[in-house]
Length: 351
Image: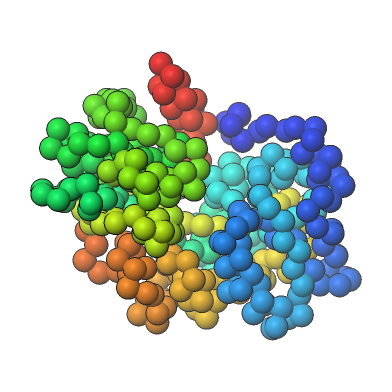
């Protein structure tokens, strides 16, 4: 297993937080009161989780929830290392769970988590998808009154379509796959990523790229018209449009990915936490969450027509018909290569 330096930061402060249980009371053991401690992103998306996922589970089982944020990998490591795991579920990148499956995260072994229910390539030993989303290429229509971008190649054409391009400052945000397809690689041949070729293509627009430190920053830049194009996740595209950015998606090529609830190693509530994950992926809950967030249910047997998306949500939903070519980001490739790519990405930006 690789070192994953970007994942393995272990601060003393984080260990103290874990040991002291800051952010909520420790969850009760399965033999006592049924309580699950849920770590997530905070803000509106965690409120959506409470409404669509947690409250129905409380009604069905009597389980209470303690919510904390943010869900950080360093704190998981600190908890597990100190032998005091107080989080039962964490909404964080599946890369962490894949890289440290069985070490920092529990293997999911509940038969209710039948992996054949989920799209091919979206599961691992320590994770299954709880929702799906896409990394979407959109442009600000106010800034292109004439010719409009129509393909992913246009994201890389600053002569015909000038202006800044905003991307999240993290390699797995869809930019590398987009660069390769824009450079002529057939979508079905994108993986394994040819990083040399991808970096050469990205270099052609380097002076027009803006690396946003957060999704909130992306939203603000698009609303303020600080950029003409954006490549970002479904939910943030929707929120940006709702906030006033006149965004139009380009349905040529996009990548899809998953959100996941993972279980930190050593929780005394593993069985109940797995029951919760299975509950989250059932049609009623997954539809309720998709309706609030504009994401897609994790299981393909859930009819998207039953979600009741708003027109704005439909506009940016990559899983509806006639939305061009999409490919699922290769989970094992990213688990194996993220550490090295993050290091190269960081050097490239300052080089």
